[in-house]
Length: 62
Length: 317
Image 1 (cartoon, rainbow over the protein chains, first blue to last red):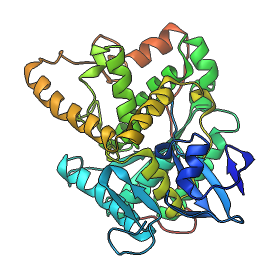
Image 2 (cartoon, each protein chain N blue to C red):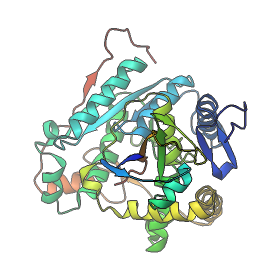
Image 3 (cartoon, chains in turn cyan, green):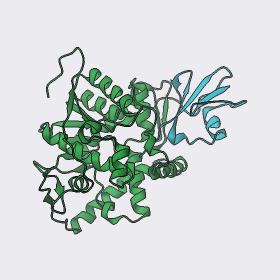
Image 4 (cartoon, one colour):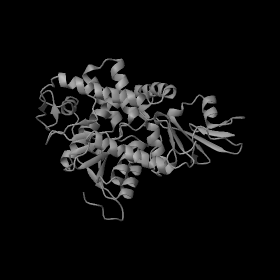
């Protein structure tokens, strides 16, 4: 499946849930939101091969 | 996960509250949290006239949206710092929200007022861009409030902003700032508007989710000058702690607020004076803003544009 994150597309395989995906990519769940097929989802969401995943960073600073 | 309220599919987990909510119940939860914060901490009084400082980001635009939805009639103000490719886009989002809410927004263009954008000004006054930006924003926010007949400036500082700033002040023991952090700064009539932060118990993640779920069109990209800012690093550290121990950020800030109430009882505040040029509160004869502008020969005229929402008669406050 393809994951869009930070303006890049990453290919990942055999990931079962959103939480596992975040762990695999070392992404902190407290600082990001995950969208599957344009819908906001929780970490236990079960991923399917054809899902379109987008992770957005929520932290802003200055 | 299932929504703790209705049992439907949850879209967000709220580990600090040991909860998960669907889109509809999350939006209600967040709006209710802002309302409870306003009431519990006495942020807004009936007589108050509110002006929201909007940047085009998720926090301030959502805050402006929430306040009006909750029935607090609030207008907006935007400071155009003259950052190429960023300030114009931000202003576009702000105007869009002004149209949605049918509330006007006052705009301060730094280039028109002082002849230069923030990058040139910060170099000229020998400060970092973020430091110059902070000083100018604080001054201008107060000035527009006083000039346009408002008495409260509302900012979108969230839980992560407050805890990261607190952490920075603690790590370096910045005593001059450490005990001053408040969620309400009192008004000094004719000189200083009240400042409130109704989002201080809402996390950045919650605010982003709220903006997305409510279809609020915000600037996703970061201010180009904030790259590498220490506050971002502190936020990252705090989120690592939060990940292992949900609720830590809330406990950190709430504990601080409780603690400072005790400290303030013991401390005597320094006597405040007012700038002989502009009336802004200061500890010396001339305020920091006037002193720096004078020292570096920057002359200008502090004026504000007013954008009125399209097509609709706006609701008078």
